[in-house]
Image (cartoon, rainbow over all chains, first blue to last red):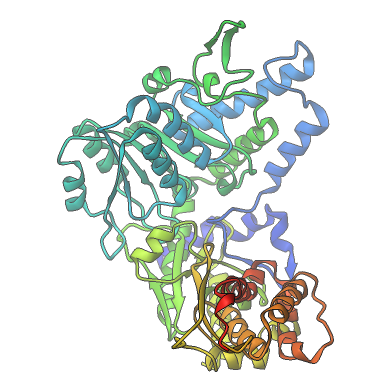
Length: 415
Length: 148
């Protein structure tokens, strides 16, 4: 028996699937095959229960009420911050709750960026960024007169370090904003090496961890990250909650993002002073229930352990690459050495929308189109792709179902 | 495949997606327009030529899914020989069918009824409506240049 099989057995995916009530759902009378976790993951019962229990037993606004309910709810909310801090190996004051990774990046662009990235400075992003890590920097460029540069990727789908050297050569780059894992190609970027490179060139690094944080353990200290963002909803948590990690000395120097309650120290009609981080960046009532849900999601994945999760997903990805490669007319996209549970592909002669709709009718959920990464899809010379993405609950038999489903799609198109 | 899926990918739609009858670049032409779906990159390029006050010819170059290509092609079938005002009416009726799922009775709509199943797929509405969006733009141009 191979090591891979032993690993999968010890992982016990059936037990994990039982934790996710939605996976029992039938779609068009068929068993649901959910292969769209990279867009948003399903939620385990413990996350749902943590949120419902909060609303049923102790919900109140946080940090305001001098009453039992508000105290309990504030404790739970701040405990969620502690869980996130532990999860990323950060200090709790370095954890800012935001709506999602997108908001985290916009926050950095509009605070750190507005203060630091003026005319004559440049931001570097890669060719494989989600729109969330491209558009905020375009907006900043247009506001500030700064420059936005795009570092090339190789045809395999990895950062081109020769081009990176070139982009940084004039010493004007002040920030490298890069994904930790491509949502189209599945590529993991060598973030430790990129951080070292950026720092050696006098730049800071922001890492978009929306995909990566789901699949492998992240240690912002070991990476030496300046900023790291992720969304709760891809990590088996609820929507509406995300995280910005910022190095303490950077957060200290940054002006507020939005004004309102919570983010102030004192307010008068003449002016206001700002609270310390992270509260300076959390104007208004936060997503309390969602933050508590995220805390439960972190407990959940931590209990499974990232070693087991990574091994399971490696098995799935290898199986998917091999299975799809064996299908005539199906071409997988991106062949990075280090890649995770996201597989994009094209089916010859059939548009990704048609592929997705015809798979959906068989109960198989995938994503089709640009995947919020239009420049990347264009860079690859493609019109669009279909994407299958995996989570802790994905099984190899679901990937086999995808292959069978794709053959049926081809039959409908007379292939 | 299930019955519902057959409702979407009907023989007529699959036939026109594989072998569109009005694909290509029309020369000469009186009006042209482009429809883009930024969500997926689908693009329809239309050119039309008037014959008197009626649409005499319409050709399209469509980069997109089967639904989009077939919609462009069957749209051309439907509006050729129509006055612009009648073509606009047809466009409105088509949009209404996609939104509601119910199709008008008149004979000019016969083949377009093949798209009534698209109603059930919200994410695919734009695929079917994109050519008609481009048609509206084309019909709005150069209406003073009708051939005598």
